[in-house]
Amino acid sequence: VLAPHLICVFIGLNPGIQAAGQGHAYADPSYLFWKLLHSSGCTSRRCAPSEDGDLPRLFELGNTNIVSRPTRNGSELSKGEMDESVNVLEEKIRKYRPEAVCIVGKSIWESIWRVRHGGGKKMKKEEFRYGWQDKEKNMAREGGGWEGAKVFVACSTSGLAATLLPAEKDRIWRELGAWVEKRREERSSDNVQMPS
Image 1 (cartoon, one colour):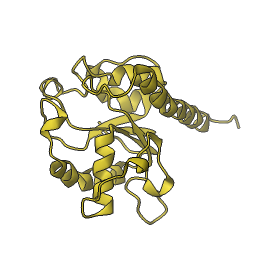
Image 2 (spheres, one colour; image 1 turned 30 degrees about the horizontal axis):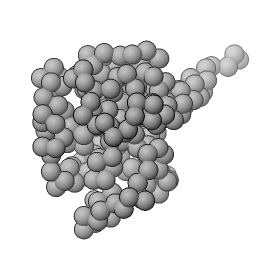
Image 3 (tube, one colour; image 1 turned 45 degrees about the vertical axis):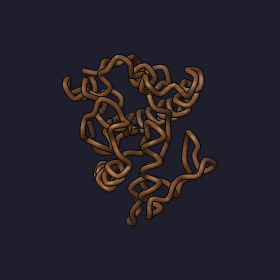
Image 4 (tube, one colour; image 1 turned 90 degrees about the vertical axis):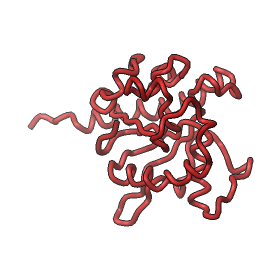
């Protein structure tokens, strides 16, 4: 679910079996994605998975995955398969040029890190953090005036990811939501026509 110049594109791991069967992102009810999207402020109401195609029109948001192959869970994906998909992901971001991307899960960011640092270099514990990443880590950077998309790393929304408490997940996602709300407001006021 992509369109040019969105505020933010969410990058998930891959479609689950239920999502692939229904044709909608995060369709499995154990996923917290739609709940966190709303409670963070990224959307003004809780959307249903069947509304994923409306995200660009309704909220200036998009969604894609690092790997397109459906699996029962993320453990069925190898690091190699994820790493091989990074260049395709970067091309999508370069083509659609969102203001920001939200990496939905640490393993996705680790894969991008390995590819960018070559040779499969593993990210050190102290090099990882949730939230906004430094400007030089923008995705799909290129010359010609586009600095690439800002990167925000959020926790996974999988029901199987239980390393963080719900309040911590809410805090991480709220940081992104506050920024999305601000950008949507700024874009809206930029589009208001002044009387002549």
